[in-house]
Image 1 (spheres, rainbow, N blue to C red):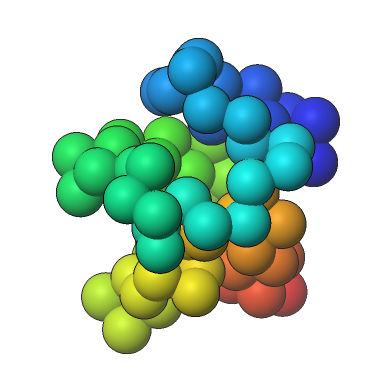
Image 2 (image 1 turned 180 degrees about the vertical axis):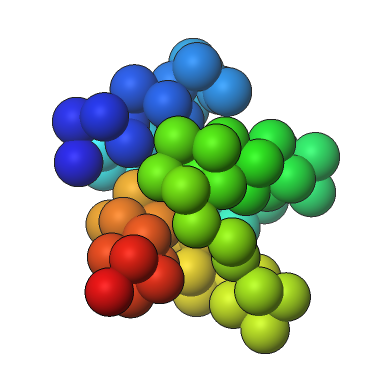
Length: 74
């Protein structure tokens, strides 16, 4: 999880990824941020995120993103 938080902070260092659970719902992350996150996750975790998984629930928090990574790696 620490690695993920670091990667997310590289994309948006002004966001409290450790505590926020409304990153999409509160429009904290933009569509461009999501594209950057997806690209970073693809590279760093050697996963491919299918379009069906690109939904707000999977990107609302670092925990949700981590759960998505775990699901796709498993």
